[in-house]
Length: 314
Image (cartoon, one colour):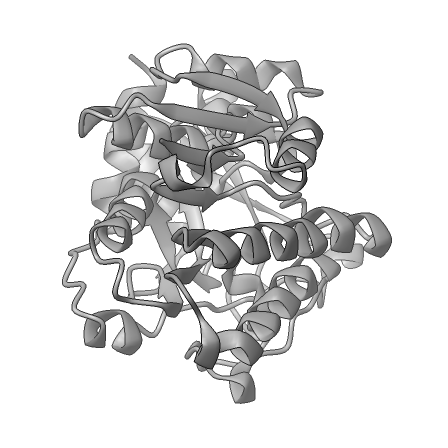
């Protein structure tokens, strides 16, 4: 049995599909369907059971599951809204919940692969998995950073695999429910269908219009990295999960325009209240991932956006 928390969400549901493609269907999905739209992400998934996130936590703490039957837990569940500033909620939901799962997995020697985030890095231009380069710009990033720190303190006494994957700017199928937090590619696709034009924020932090750079990573690549660690339980640690190549927002926009073969690109003022809360440059340092033995080749923006546009517009 494999457990996927956040399994009805963006990355989680794609991970369930990836497991299905390998022949796994003894999967328990854990999520919070208060946002009922997320159910659509599960329609094509083959799973054994669904549990609400609160019920699951209670069952874990009460010893409901036969721990020896759990092959691994993929912990993808979190509040990933970077504009959420309720720190108490964010820490309970993202930090404390992960701690409980961590100690359960360690007590029963169960591999735990969890979602960290590139949001731990802040404004430094070096994105290497070291404390010197970390400094989150929002409380979401801090909630992820703090569990990474917690894991580092336990690193020398682990009883089973623990892997934190620092996701960079993930895009792809099954993110529709995320609303304003969905990827730029998703929003640009909607815009061009509505008005034949697409809009990006003007430049800031010294970058020209649309030239801010992010490490955009296609969700199938993220799934492949998760599954690589499942196949390699001897490897633990915190690893960047991005392409290792930053590209501009203009690159994303041009890939959307190329797919639709119509439209024009416009720029709108960058909102004042968002300045200083987001990174203008991200690029995953993949040295640790490669040193661990993972040689996965990531898709470029041009490749990934084309695949995503084909999926969105089929």
